[in-house]
Figure 1 (cartoon, rainbow, N blue to C red):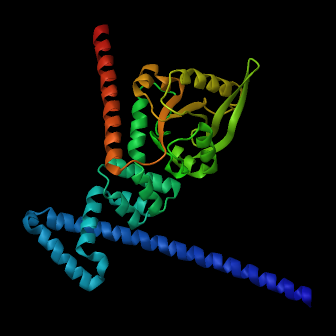
Figure 2 (cartoon, rainbow, N blue to C red; figure 1 turned 120 degrees about the vertical axis):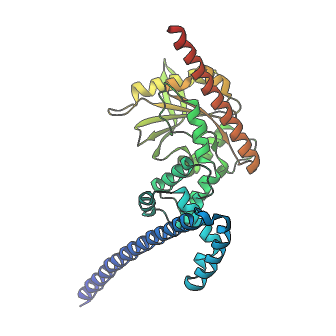
Figure 3 (cartoon, rainbow, N blue to C red; figure 1 turned 30 degrees about the vertical axis):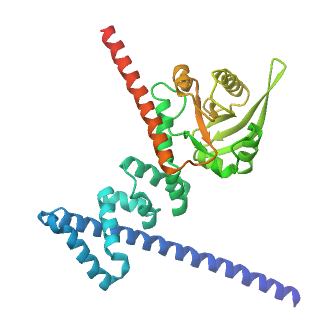
Length: 348
């Protein structure tokens, strides 16, 4: 009887677990459908008000109409339709004008996700952060943190370094890397930085790029009977590249290029597997010395140099610094294009 009772109890628990799974899957499906319906409703309402009120000859007093409409809708349908939310819906419809795109995004992103995207200045930035939120399964909080960390702007800065012929895929690296999660003080050794990255690997990999996997620390390489040690080795699953990372205290030095080239050649010969692309390298420094980097054109050899910060500066300082870096990068790109154009004219 005891064995029968135990067997019966296990069967009941198993049945309960499977029944709970069915119910929870159904609840999740209902929640997704409800979220999509809510998002599309808000988009359609925003489009209606934008086109019928603000976009017509009544635009002169359209602002008052929005206020009045909000009051009436609140009485009839609740606080979700008050004036400030109506304005968000209008902005939503204007920034995402294609309903099919909204439906597609709405299957994975909530209305609150979209609200986090609305303050962004460009369609490119909104598309970038929406894609990151979907591919990484970011919560609203995670999306806001990524936006606050200027992920899109830093990607643009990084890409500006590798225009033209390059062995480094675009959109792989950020510049600068933000390592504030490491809890480091202003003064520390390279081994402290390395240890902290290892300790909080998940956060660093998220910062490094989607689909990165940690492979090895202090990768040993024997060359001419001498031992060399690469700080960190990763693998990018989507791109199928080994990624060598060297951590440096202080400004970038040209000698780092030769060191990284040696490591990449060794990895290409002894560690690269069939079906993989050539290894690429990332040198992290406290200052990137961008003119040296431009002159060396290391991106052609699969090497990128990026700065790392151990804490976010104040918002105004961060924006000013990013703008300064971006303008300098854009100026270098324009200069290269001008030089290339002059060379073509000389050839003709």
